[in-house]
Length: 344
Image 1 (cartoon, one colour):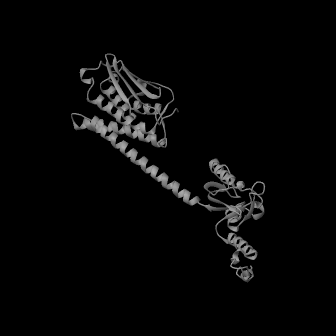
Image 2 (tube, helix red, strand yellow):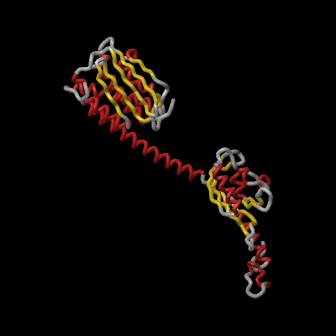
Image 3 (tube, one colour):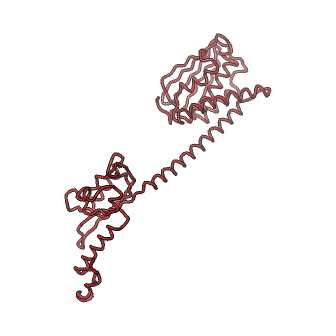
């Protein structure tokens, strides 16, 4: 390579040596060597030619992408785009090139073998002394590992928030169980608590099976009806799913209704029946009707148990639960909003 300091004696006056014809040539040669030998992948494109083709690609770029120089020289850089390349990122690049300005963007690009990587792309225009656009200089940086680490950190934060939310929800339900569980002796108390804990366990198993995604309302209801005798309950309603957050409090309320029916209501009489129907009107409506059992006694009319169930419906489901102790049997309705739910 020519010694860039050698032409200094040929200059006129105090003109810098680097800006003489020989100095400019030496600078171009030095720039070429620097681009070629740097470990940063780089290309130079010529916007004065049709399709803004690549006119220079260094060894680091060829190593990153797996292409040969013959395969990339004369091509537009879009050959690195693929199915997962964000159209918005492509639009940002096109706008920057059209306006002749710098662009910094991260997007998915593809190697010759079809494998993808996250590319942190920096594009800078190169102008001559008169301000005319000559080239675009583009550097690439594989940031796949950094993106993966960031995504993992965000997912961990999301999971921690989800675990915290589930834990708080479970504690609130346990508090509800404690408040609901009242009995005159230890054995009756233990039996009542065990039944309610079993209801939560069934709901938890169902959620785990579904991956903590929305669950079929029919399955939740059946899970709490079956321990008390499914043949004496008529279930009617369209295919509907409810949010995972709603499954456990709903299971607890359904268990409580079934247990009350078995002890005091329709299921305490061999001829008694229960009808449960549901529909979606923006809110989920679940109606409960008992027939064929003993008429509700004065002691079973609005009191502690119904008040606590209404409180759970309000606090855990953001809904409401009403009770009507008619002579033919209990009528109840539970309504809660359809947010974070969808049709099955």
